[in-house]
Image (tube, rainbow, N blue to C red; front, side):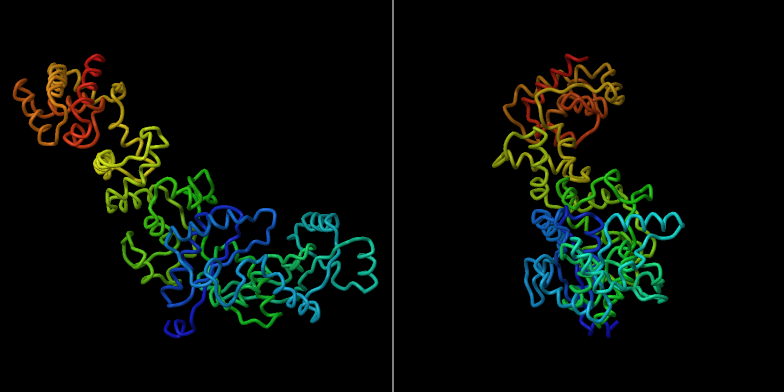
Amino acid sequence: MEGEKMAKVKVRYAPSPTGPLHIGGARSALFNWLYARNMGGTMLVRIEDTDLERSSREAEEMILASLRWLGIDWDEGVGVGGPNGPYRQQERLHLYRPYVEQLLQNGHAYECYCSEEELEAERQELLGRGELPRYLGRCRNLSQKDREAYCAAGRKPVIRFRVPENRQLVVDDLVRGRVEFDSNGIGDFIIVKSDGFPTYNFAVVLDDALMGITHIIRGEEHLSNTPRQLLIYEALGFPLPQFAHVSLILGEDRSKMSKRHGATSVLQYREQGYLPEALVNFLALLGWSPEGEREIYSLAELTKLFSLERVAKSPAVFNLEKLNWMNAYYIKQTPVAELTQLCIPHLLAAGLLETEPAGNRLLWLQQAVASVQEKMEYAAQAPELLQIYFGETVELDPADEEAGKVLALETSPAVISALAQKAEAYPDWDSETVRRVLKEIGKELGVKGRALFMAARIAASGRSHGPDLNVLLTLLGPRVVRTRALAVLRQL
């Protein structure tokens, strides 16, 4: 371990800017960040934007904003700079060309003029024979005359890597152990497209090598790319990095994570009012487990404990219920003023607030939020939890059996009527006044316990359950309590 630390670990996260940062990508970025910070190394972020049709600067900004929101920073790369730029692939094309020429000259690559129709016919033939589709090398040994004829016919070549035959390619993966690949099953693959843009497998090797990346920590779906990349490293004489392929994230039904399992992007969770500390804690435990039974860890603790040795080979299961439990824990630790600010956009969107609250109205809202803080799992639940504080009147819920039982008590109409009358006497009231009013009603009517307090709760909210009764009545104020109580009386 000490030797590894002295080697100065350098990792990277290299997203394609084709959409927001998804959960799988966020977990990969986090694992890279945790490993770099744990090992005293360097974190680099670059952008793989050679997919011209789907890449956008807007998506890039969404990804970078998501990383920052999660608390993932980087020492080198896009937006930060450094000695190995530029950090967007579209800006690095001139750096790739000399290596293409090197591979062509030493015979590790060649020009291929096959048409889409010819390739598809070859693919169908292989499938018909029950074989894995691959390029069989039709253009491997073209003569100069053949090349000239193809060019004269207007065909634009791609450049393919010449895969050696009968080789066992070995990856000593830091997560999966020894993984072997047969070169005969790969086929000569494209490294430069006909438009001159490099393919992923070629550009990623050049970028990693030229930027001095020592450890490549990425999703298991990239494992099948690794033998092609090993061949490019070897052909160009670059030192090999160490690979660590992290297991897939599955939905609770153990199928590939998708929208039907809930939100799939980090921004969606942010918009729903999840806290970055909770999402980081949750993501860290998707496929990695520290010793012991604890599940709540700060970012500092995760950084200290993280190691690739404890990353699991088996797929991780995304459990939304567990994320909600974890987020609820962090919400309970959040200062009420801060939590209120997270709730306000949702209350505005739901129409419960018309404008941003300020002054006494903001202080009132903070008290209301505090009263439901224990029940909240994420801020988007604020309208549902706080609905009880908004509106002049209430409707009794026929499905609330407990409320029905209380309202059926002989004393309930008198309690509700007395509450309306008492409230009329006050322009405003505080918690102590509310306590005194309830005590007076109980004494005057000879009721107590459930018959008193539950009836008062239903009078004020139409429900049998909710925030602390004293807090509820205090925050509603005497005018709204009276109006609601009279409305309930009319429904009896």
